[in-house]
Amino acid sequence: MVRRVIAFAGFFTLIGALSIGCGSGLSEESAKLRCDQERTSNAAGCITDAVYAQCLSCYQECGNDCVRGDACPATFTCRDDSGSTSGAGGN
Image (cartoon, rainbow, N blue to C red; front, side):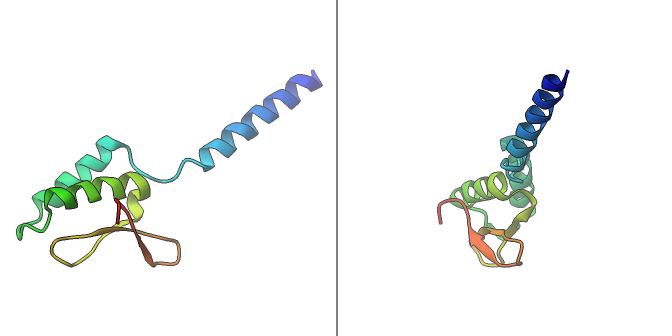
C-alpha cells in the first residue's frame, strides 16, 4: 500500500514538473488566429509575409506575452516578467 502511495506521488510530481516546463506559448492554430487578426486589423500594410512568420513564432513561443511594436513594418517580441522585451521569430 505504501509503495502505491509513493508511486502515485512520484508520478504526479513528475507530471507537475513537466507541465511547468511547457512554456506559455500558444498552439500553431491559436497563433495563426492571432496573427490573422493582426494582419486584418493592419490597414497600413505593415504585416508583410516575413513579419507574419515572426508573429507566428512569437505567439507560439511567448503566448500572451507577445507584443507588437509600433514600427512599420511591424515587429513582434516577447515581454518578460520585468516588462522588457526580447526578440522572437529569428531576430
